[in-house]
Length: 481
Figure: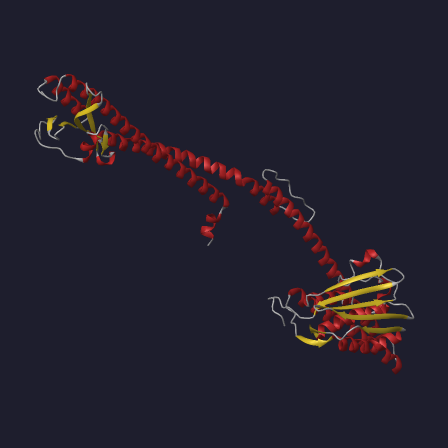
């Protein structure tokens, strides 16, 4: 495959296109000009022959040659004319009888042909083509009647002229024109190569500049030769900016993951070292330490599980087990499950269902997504406080609004709350718990369900999340489930 890689070269294609166009134009011009030149020469020969015949016919009428064709001068002129045009001259009278022939043959014989008959009506008739090797003219010999004043055709001169000389000249002209065309094409190939080289050179400069980029801070030089090169450089800068943001996000994500994973391990290490450095540890203290270690292990496991779920969702490999579910019943189960946490935090959970609603969903994923939002409303709330869940639906979509009486989220923080490991109140993240991945998981789950999640918040008053997703799940192929 690599041996033929040069065939995909843009420069080669530009060169070939220009060369093919040049060859086509040169060939069309050569053929058309030669054909036109030969046609003009044939027409010129026909016009000269016609003029000579008119002169000859005038001499014949003046010498009364039609009644007495013994004139040596006219016979010599007839023979000379046939020699000049490498052809034959015949004179046909009104009875269609040949009365003169430059070849001295067929005298007294009859010549009844269509062109001769038409010529007796007073018109000159041309027959034969240059491809046939000759042209033939039937010219009337007319004089004016003294009584009526009308032209009367007394005879017809049938003249044949050879075109072989013209055809031989044409062959020679074609040969010379071909030589000239070959020379021009060699010159044209050089011009095409130069054009192809210069036209592609700006793109090569852009390519080399891209290859020399070693970090996200380096700018490409502005290659303003073409509009396209400027657009490529601008597109590269935009791509570089996106990649830079992605790299920064990746580094921040790795840093956050490392921190979040190390924190439980560090706690376990401290607790274990404390037990190892003490002798005669009371059973109660030993039990408390082991409970703390178990909690940290659970926290570590929860972080890893959430990370794996997010990775699967990002890669599109998360399986969806969609079934029709009673949304009212699902929310009641979530509230029942979070009841102990709410009571401990002195938060009232209020479910307001405006109508019975059912929808297609992955029950486990949607339950976890809604649980994350409601649980955040409980954790980041006042004491005492409340979390209100309002369920509604129209003929297409389910709408769930989850509002709380918490302290609210600053406006500058709202656009970041769905980022992984992002916490608004970082100083109390340890006491509040969680992995910092809950809202990210919720948002990805709703996107998988072709839904959306919006947030509004007012400092000191609380936060409101609005979740919407279609009642009928539509797969990526556009099929309803």
